[in-house]
Length: 103
Image (cartoon, rainbow, N blue to C red):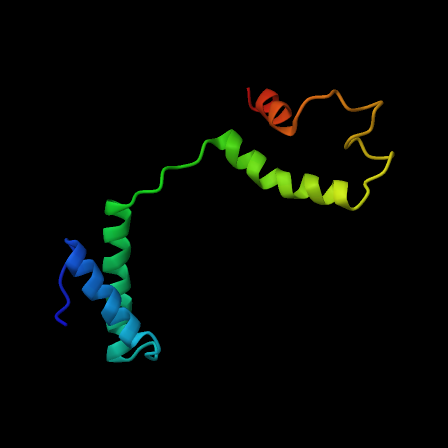
């Protein structure tokens, strides 16, 4: 396969097939260099064809915090922690709290 820009779906598939064939090539060899170039071309095509929008900052923070909050609850955070403590819990959700902080 001749290395050329990936502009069409057929070009994309051919590049993927070539990368799969050469995947185990040693870095720094001609085959390894070919894989590097093809992967760069594939990434450029995917970025243009299938863009991933940036996440909403609040949603990203909540997403990152939720597993820790769940782990704290699963570990039995206990009364000494504010998580779920009736005297300290305002009844608001984590999303509400993060939204207020970010505002």
